[in-house]
Amino acid sequence: MVMLSTNEPEKKKKKTESKGSENGDTVNYATVVRKVKAYLKKGVAVKELQSHIAAFPVSAQEKMNALLEGLFDGVEKAFGKEATKRKNHLAAAVPGDDEGLQLLLLNAVEEFCYKKGSNALNEVALILKALYDVDLVEEEHVVHWYSKGLKGDKKDSQIWKNAQPFIDWLRNAESESEEDEKSLCSIQNIEDYDITFTYCYCPQFDVFSLLLYPFILNKGSCFGPLCS
Image (cartoon, rainbow, N blue to C red):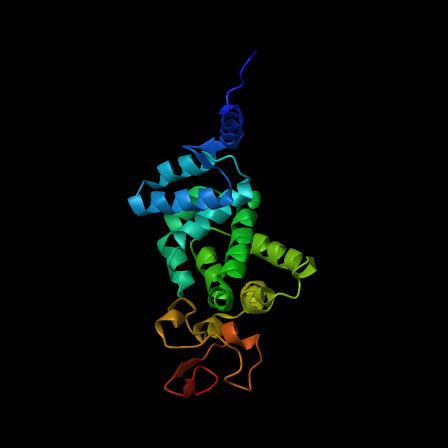
């Protein structure tokens, strides 16, 4: 009589679970995010981090999503400033003017905003502006991403409404006169003030006026180029 080991099913199970794993952990998106956060906490060099991310057996979009989620870990506001601080990490992931990589980054911003909630959604225009200012995304690719989003399954999402002022600013930037540009409040510095990112404080302006003619709330007062 041949005796079968009672450990045989368990061995087979362990062998199956080890498939597609790294150091005993199943390599899925959650694992990648966890490892990216760990690498960032260790302070690994930018190139080394990119090397680790490139080796993960997940899609290119998931790699970009995980990088963004890791970079913004623990951040609850001022996402635009954080993007500027982390520009070296982002630039390593989006080198040159590669349209595909820029769209991956923009898609990652979109996914991050959905996951993070209202705080990030309210600041999406500032995030896009920060990425644009450090040459991580180009105008045509941002507009393409935005136009595609308006036709997608999430076309009614708040993200597109909140991003529209920046898109309008991009589209009109070339036609604006130098005098008009001088009258704009600095979008970069708007985060330094105690404001709420909403579009209802000044009834005389509609949502599209926020970035073109922004105003700042300070102890209940409203002031700006057209409000003073």
